[in-house]
Image 1 (cartoon, rainbow, N blue to C red):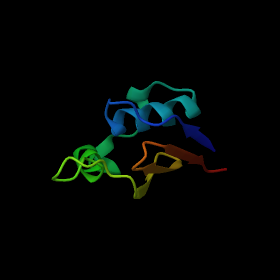
Image 2 (tube, helix red, strand yellow):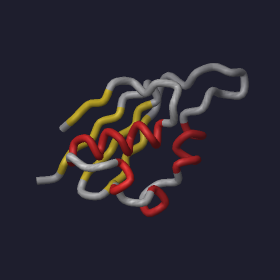
Image 3 (cartoon, rainbow, N blue to C red):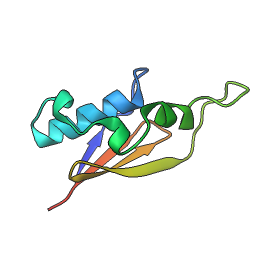
Length: 84
């Protein structure tokens, strides 16, 4: 299992893909196409600030990406659990 640092201002999807690629020892462009497992725009919208610009401090979403289970938290933490 690998835990990435909290996501910087760049997109959570890119951070997620980079974390999975790093764990697999591959290039992020070799990782499964995003729309095969989750909508990247939906992932960003899920954790976007609320209507009054308040950051979302709670919540998480998990999905499969290649051979991994990925959990993205509102805090920016990304946890990648490798199968096997």
